[in-house]
Amino acid sequence: MYQLDHPWLLLTLLAPLLVWWLLPPHRESSASIRLPFFAQVTKAAGVRPTDGAVIARRTWPQVVCEALAWCFIVLALSRPQFIQPPIDKVQPQRDILLALDLSQSMDTRDFPSADGLTIARDEAVRQVVTDFIRKRSGDRIGLVAFGDAPYPLSPFTMDHVLVETMITDSLPGMAGPRTSLGDALGLAIKMFDQTTVPEKVLVVLTDGNDTASRMPPLKAADIAKSKGVTIHAVGIGNPTATGEDKLDTVTLQKIAATTDGRYFFGGDQAQLAAIYEELDRITPEDQKVLSWRPRVDLFHVPLLAATAVLGGYYAIAGAAVLMRRRTQS
Image (tube, rainbow, N blue to C red):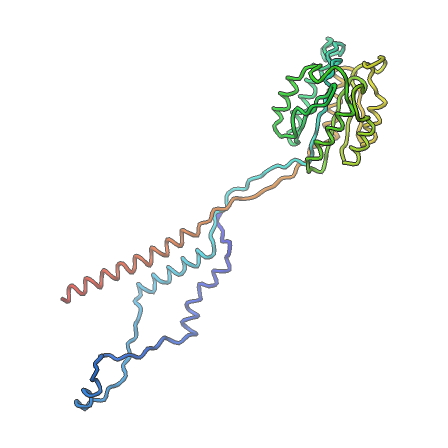
């Protein structure tokens, strides 16, 4: 659509009429014949010189062209614009960080799959987490892997294909054989410090207990709460095992409770998929839509039209005067 950015300037279309009506015409006195002895000539001739008046009058073509040019100039000053169709930009209001345990125990083949077979824990996690990412099209997602130490694999991004690729290429033990849950929470908090979204959600998945962290997990949970980070903890593995292989459900429950999150236990792939479906349900997409309409200024069109009208008129008028003089000579 087209619009005028300053439509009130159209009121100046009547300005020439107001000037003509309110201001008197310009008067200038001048001698019709310039002679150094004009007074002596008139005295000798016995003639008394009188004042004369020459009124320059506009022709109708001149009035029409000048009025049309003035209308074009006022239109240009009103800043005509072409308003293009609106462009919408969706701005995410939530950042989700996935922290995946890639310690060596994730290679254990004791996890029941959906078809009844036994698969490695990391394989089941990759399938379920990838499906979860595909459902979160409106959120920025980041990825952290932890073993002996935590490693950021992907910053917060809308490029979910990148995150899926990093998950697919991850292998158990690539971050070390042990589990540093507390340090992973600390790294996640630092990554959230760089974001400005109102909602910050951390989903951490582990199959063991913390054996390598310098920061206690519960202390990290307290810091996360003060930073406004909600932690959902997902545990897989064997809670009844001993040593490093035992799933520390008590610590995971306390971490989730401290940050107003939830704790889930996935005994098989179906339960794990149901957990991420529940996480998808309790963290509905929250987006802010920014909309604007590009504008293209068109003031040069009426300005060129005014120049063309005046230029054309005076060119034709000048040519007519030259033709008249040639005819008279």
